[in-house]
Image 1 (cartoon, each protein chain N blue to C red):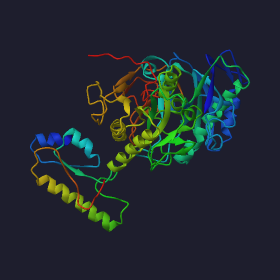
Image 2 (image 1 turned 45 degrees about the vertical axis):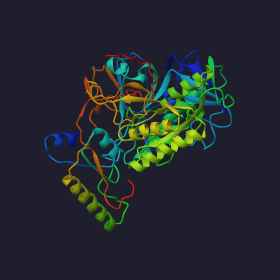
Image 3 (image 1 turned 60 degrees about the vertical axis):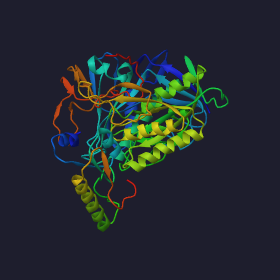
Image 4 (image 1 turned 90 degrees about the vertical axis):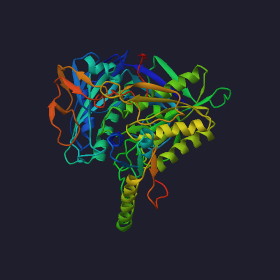
Length: 84
Length: 435
């Protein structure tokens, strides 16, 4: 809901969320798939080095999403994540 | 599996020097009950009170409610895995004291300060607007008030409170041993009758896998990240499913609710009327942390239901928040396999009932029963008397929230704090108004 209001005000928004179907339903413009509800931007189960890499990927994906022109709700998946 | 539930209704609870049940009057020895509970070193003080519908009292510090039951014949006992060994239940004869509950209240500070593991207690008004908001205000209550010793961790405090309430309930139920019930009800599977539709109850259970007690236990074992489990409805009536007694929040049903699951009872009664076969209860763990988990558990339920040749299902849940995503995905998965569904849920709706009622929905969810709004604001008038461990309560639950006198007029921004204030499974007589 907040992302939609920011969109309406003309600010590009990327919403990082593990519950992307809920975000799709609400109609967010740019949705970035996150890892899990309690830790969206990383995975504490990974060794620190791999977690850092994953966190970087998620942030870079979000930055890419921000620069993308989207006409409708679009989901962006960080590279190297098969499922989340 | 055949269970005979023998009903002994209670119209009055009295303190006395003995334990006795006769003609609806239950006499209990409060000193003996306190002694029983105080054998546990984790409990440093214990006493009992009685409250009845219409009393101008507000009960505080509520952790759970339980209906007194006794296994009168059959090899097992009630509350397997908690009061007795992990042995099959749901057979034989069980006695119940209807119309009453043991209302377990506890002073417990807790060791966890934030998050989903924080201890929480509820209140119950027996008169006025608060009473009208709760299904428990119509029961007679034996209020058990305990103080948990300091420095006890949550899971141990739960063990102490639960043992105390269940032992007290059992002691009371023993007054009916050898007595003839006014009436009995038979609960039995009807597997042979294939002409009628087979209907299952899909019971979503929000569990916090990372907490000491996840919130919902089966035979005393907290359910964590399990896939869907088929149980027999009779197991519910004998106390196979219990709850975390350090957290009483109205959207998490109590032990009393699991013992008296209104949808399980309704399905049995519809079976007795020749309308359907009650096929199974499927316990579905919900609140997986990522979408993949939610997809798989929804699939797991639908797969199990299809394998059990289920034709239709009532789908309901406990808890709040993202766990509802699984509920909707389960409906989709069932409907895609040709299994008809009806959703039974409370609504959100906000202060005035005009906000979005549900967090998430799917087009396959085409039949739903609302059990009322959870977060309409409510004003509770001043109470004449407080019963329970707390004279001051926190109306807001964040760490460091200020306390207010429990007796005062209270404004609550949701029903979460009222024991029985959220009707997850539709046990109350709701009526519908269209605007």
